Image 1 (cartoon, rainbow, N blue to C red):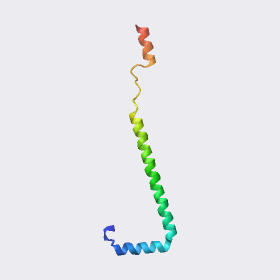
Image 2 (spheres, rainbow, N blue to C red):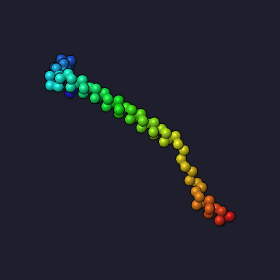
Image 3 (spheres, rainbow, N blue to C red):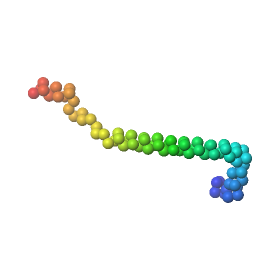
Image 4 (tube, helix red, strand yellow):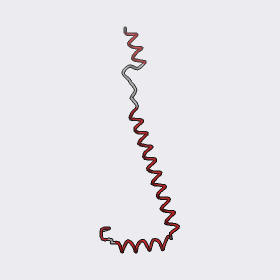
Length: 76
């Protein structure tokens, strides 16, 4: 469907969008979109760093809990 759109059709669509919204509205829309993408990327990198920190921590050792140690002392 979109493969049939040529450069002239895109130019006509661009002219119509400019006529409807104006250049100021489109520039502010572009800057807002850029800020949103930048915020999303930084949030994704923070989430990856947090996940990496969580995966680097060693798990607790539950082989000998205090209850097991007290049972071992009373059995001996």
